[in-house]
Length: 174
Image (tube, rainbow, N blue to C red; front, side):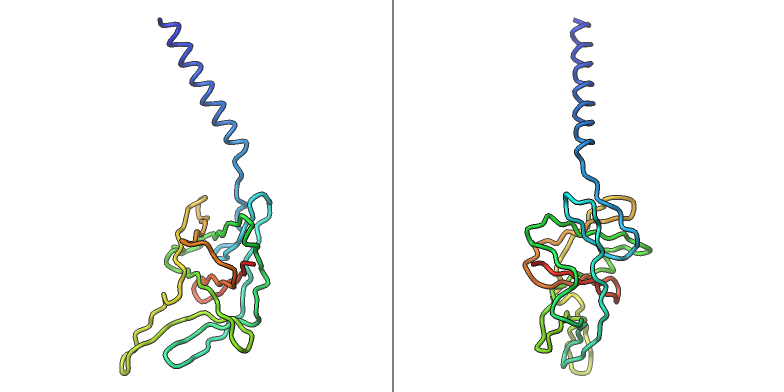
């Protein structure tokens, strides 16, 4: 009876080690970003991590709102909707969930991209709503300070901007 138990334990240990080793061999690691606070994307199956396009922005004021405006119809970074892409960021000295916003840009008549900076309301008082048109996302910790940015809904084709503080990083979904 003791010999049977010993053989079962040995078989379970060997099977467990085999499965762990098999899983480890085929697990694909996401490359680590070189710079903190710069969102990047990674297409599964490739070994290349690419930064999103850092944009020069202007602030445009309209009645009741302020907007960030970016030059051009489209970002320099275009991702195919069919690609299995992963958005990631390496956090520096901040909690990325409190300092980042993901927004879809609208195209203007002047062929620029805009995202809301703040929506205001009130006559004598101003109440700014910075979450207007924000796309909710979750963060998944991948490594020490590296996080995957997971939008709560699938991103449709269009132009997007990840705001990290007052810096905009753009990408498009084809």
